[in-house]
Image (cartoon, rainbow, N blue to C red; front, side, top):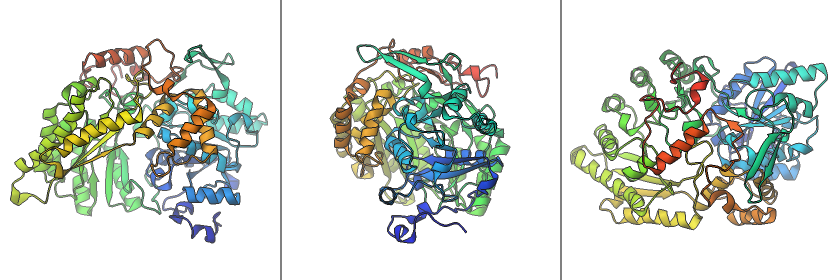
Length: 621
């Protein structure tokens, strides 16, 4: 019988002690003496968020299919548990075995968002490893990181042994097999392994690359320190989603997770080309799972978990070519088995009345429409590809279909944004609220319409046409949010509209990490060592500590976020080949400034470069 690492007296004092005990439904246990490689897959945030992350579940499934590998899970201990573990010298442990991860072979960390970076250091520290990769010895596990934020790995470069760039299903087996072979032959050392791993496509070893800078602080050169590793790291793409690993028996959390439902990924990639969206660029090309595969996965997950809700996952589910047939299948099954269907990532212009009529008898949640900008001019700048008419028709269809709760997402601080664009957000929300009362007869209403408006602040991301854009100081963002709020308060239907906006200071920090280089790393280390943790959470984020960290390490945030970069500047992530050509991104940036839209990939090929992967929707496949 497993013995829990955290004793009862500790568990009883912790918030949600079930986060630390493991043994969830569908978790995998193995005999550690009968496996060759042990992996700790870490999500650097709290259990409830990490358990909702599909990527971790996929990798967990993929690794544990191998008889010679045992993959366990780790989530960032909540601050109360983190403090106890530090105070009592309790090392970070895998949930399945309850054994210290410092005895494992690999510690894998997914980088889902930038504000988790101090949590990354927290995991390494609790594992009782040196924070700096250069200080680790041969008997310590290798620390590998991947995920969306790995497209600019440089702010974390000194802490990570190697990064994996791209879809995890493609070359991880080669990474593990190389490790096994070197261990078995007796020629393993950390240095030699990292040198050989750097030759595997998609693997970036920061210690084997050198950066030099110009007098103005911009990058002069980024080059390998040895001859036979690539100067550019090529993103890896899973060409056949139908035959890639997928969790048919996903883990069911002890504590209610953020997404407490069955999740079926219907496709990867996106055809739309929104110019602010990193995922829409770096996950190209669009690759679909077949209808039969999706149906099979849906049934298997519902049967193996007992969930009462199922969600379809993708960047733009409306663009799944077999969506009508899939909806018919799910409606038939879910109606008979009292399962709710969640339909996120649906575009307003594609959310047909036919689909809504089919799901109207299923339990309704609020519908989310990502309008992103209030005016058509600005929607053209960001290449959103929808019109006000699309938005109004979509909402009208929703209201006729029985919904009375609508969430609208916008961004503030977009390139070329004006006060007119900001006011238009509140005006559009008011028109949508009025539309409800004009559309739905009084006797058919189930209550007042609820229009929930949320604005986030635009953060430029690597490998997007807006990667050269600037940001603004936090006070400027709050001024822009106030403009939206004042417009809503002055509207006729303001009682039906709720407005929420993000924290401007945190948005700027996100930009520093998204756009920064290796020189940002000392500030992250300083902040962690002085108490920074869970920075993505408003309750724990400490702006004064980060100002202190930047001052102490001589990092100038303005250099990274408060200036527009020239197209000639070498960016910290330019050594990565993500499949999207620099020329395409530059052309899209110019088209944005000219307020010109670019057709989506289904309408015509824009020559972004990812046809070289020879898969998905791209010509020639």
